[in-house]
Image (cartoon, rainbow, N blue to C red; front, side, top):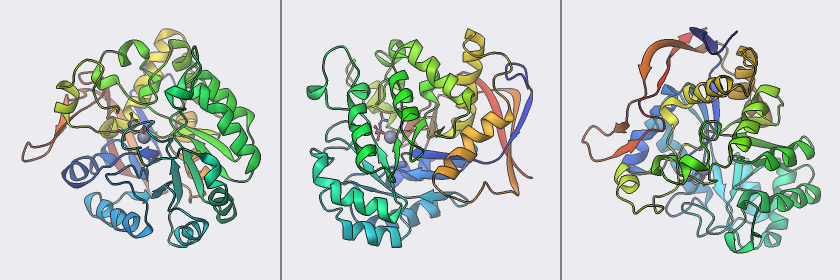
Length: 362
Ligand code: NCD
Ligand code: ZN
């Protein structure tokens, strides 16, 4: 298959292992876009307001999501916080909660209740390891703890390594990895450590992220060389790397109305999740970063669907459904908008031509 010219691609349903679904009207608007992006399984982030720190709230949220987006399998997470004791881990595991998200305090949107001292959670991590729950990490050190000349993500990597060493069987996901150094660090860990890669980190760099509010997110897109390592990592096909869009909707006005450099962090890709991964890979081929035939259906199916499901120990992708992507000259609209017009969210790469996606019985 030559991605640059192929007209039609059939793939298993994608699994998006990092989504932000928000609450209320925003949730009602974005949850139905999951299927539009070719995704039938979504791992949901807990950075709500207030953060999801109790099992009851996680389960109630899951019900709301299922009602808002029937047909999507939602995997749920708790927000790591002092109330998440080993006992809570045992109960969460029994309740079918999949993961616990670690946000360094203040690292990103709605993370003020996050972790300041990791050592305070060693008992919790030990309980997660014994219950085989997944630890999802926002891997950025605080600016105040980051030496000059390295990125916040690079400054976090020693913490990842020491956690893995201390809890070698704990399944850890370094979320939305954005640097060549992070890819190396994840490869150097054992099979219990994996990483998600977003669509937008395949096509954005610091050049766009610095100045376009719709390209601004955490972790901030880095150098072209980092972006190209992410693309090559997908082409290599290691099971340690899989798709997590980190689609993070913010109201359009909060992006356009912000002072320069002050827009909330988050890139919204959900309605075109699979399509934007293809766009990022296509552009890498056009730049000569990947060979023309470096991307085929198997690589795409592994990255978008199989690797994530396997790491999460889920059953294989639904055998009776597939997504069909065709080049029909469709372009990404500027935004999605609620029926009453009250909420609007700008979509990444608006105006760009993308594959048209539809669901079919396999
Ligand atoms: C996310 C959000 O808006 O909730 N923002 C982002 O830039 N990715 C939070 C996060 O995942 O860091
Ligand atoms: Zn996120």
